Length: 103
View 1 (cartoon, one colour):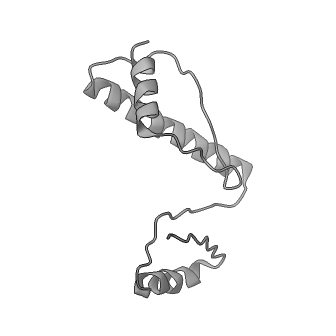
View 2 (cartoon, rainbow, N blue to C red):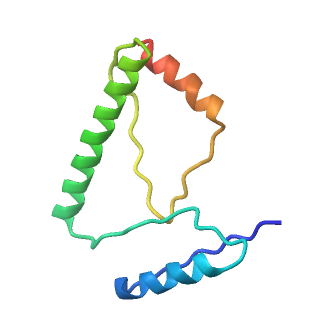
């Protein structure tokens, strides 16, 4: 049986102690770490721009690695903590990648 716990730490000074507690627990594992930032509109746009640049660079490398070229962008999705990402099987993502790379 697996139990999942979400822990939110507002004070960065306490994060080390929280991580130590998780590491010392028997059969406990940390599976996800998320870092949030202040809701400054300018900061958010800069972060989105950087994320887009990184995504484009990764897409170009992946396409080149499989001998494909990139076509037009079909969709972009931004997710917030309150909007959990859907879990699709890896085969579904691979099928969509092949379809997009073929364009």
